[in-house]
Image (cartoon, rainbow, N blue to C red; front, side, top):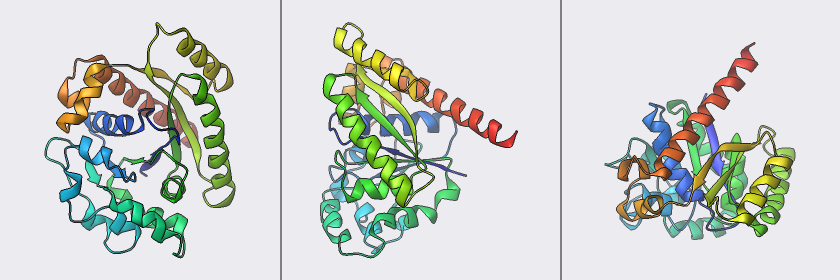
Length: 262
């Protein structure tokens, strides 16, 4: 059964899209079958995977509005080993249109159900707000990964997102759980970063990933080349960190599966 993970945080600039692209590439490097679903109107996950967002015929917008099947809209970019459901600015219109539609919260879940058996992992890149697009992602997902910078306001944003996850769990998606908290853009020389990181480990001891994503120039440069960092500079600290995250994720899931079958 495929693992559907929404990568979400209503705070922008915390490394959501970077995590989505690079985790997709790292999981596919371990021979897992991966689909990246772009649900952000900015289309950065699409561009960062090497797809020109304004030159695609069909996007996640068409899928959400029922104007195309997910199968027709998905594509395989040239330089990566995972499939992409692309997005662009059209998604903004979809968000408005969804408000009037029946079953508006579950349209992405219905679409993904048509192809999920083909994949081991489906990663959904969410927009930086708790809107109808993010809610669609959380309803479709089995878990949510929360990338966050270790800074003062991050903890406030985290509690709001956890409340939303709990509401969705209680109303429309009882399976939803927090996959894990990922510390991103981490600079160990920063005292505040170390302090916030320590607080996270105290409050969420079982949910914070051991893997920490560092601030890394190569990680920042890779999207402008339309490549995940492991394709751009595999030896960089950013590439090594995302490969480690993929390994940690796989080990967690294998352990969970083993317990379930015991």
